[in-house]
Image (cartoon, rainbow, N blue to C red; front, side):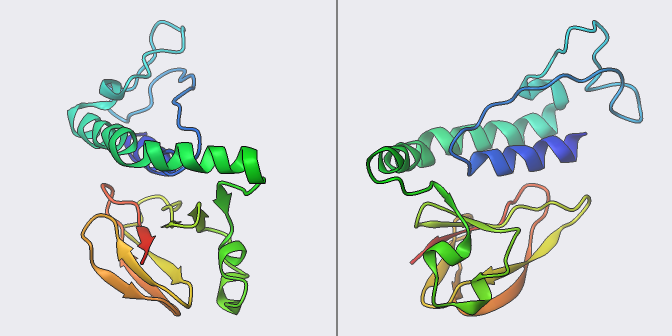
Length: 167
């Protein structure tokens, strides 16, 4: 359950709307400890409900969203209303001249700036990322640069979602 909630938060972090909802019925951890709904009331579901280690990861994502992404997402929302441009976009939308972008179904652009490659396989600690041709890509977590026009296996431990800024 902890891995799942962290990966869902990572995905939600780079979505137009990011809210936690849900109902857990019964033990979710093999130990029967954390993440247990004993009241039948669909709670608790707060970031601290998953243990201290997970709380740190989830809290960091909430802070990043509020401090870094909120103005950008608000700008994208205004653009949707004014121009009808989608906020979350398939790669081919931004890179129509790059044939490699047409068959990618597990990455997306958040607006024109962020390339997001969520981890969707349980226990995965890396994943393949298609970097569209025509731009360099800056890793938002460590500022390293990746040239476009390549497919690269990148590291994705539990505390990292592969996200790159178009530069």
